[in-house]
Length: 94
Image 1: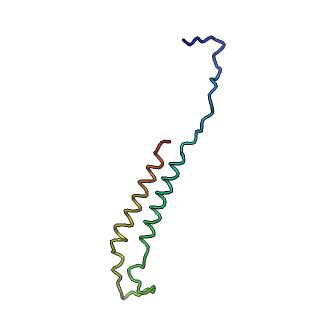
Image 2: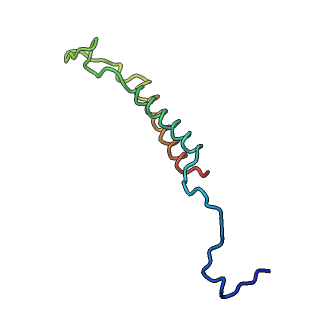
Image 3: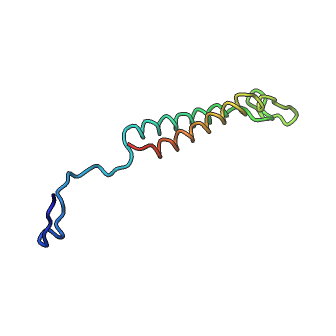
């Protein structure tokens, strides 16, 4: 049974100082993984634009490569997965 007296009032209990930083090593690992997914997604989106042939602008030509599966399906999926991983990394507890 704990007994308290008036002289104990206002005294701090001695506790070991704990690390108050929210993010741990696992959080940073997941953040780097998410960042890597985002970077890979944006790199997959890169390529010539619609009017570029052999690296030169040609208004009379059309490049159907802008509608490739890599650029309109896979790359945005990587970016979205990266952002989901980032949210997980921020909300994950130590």
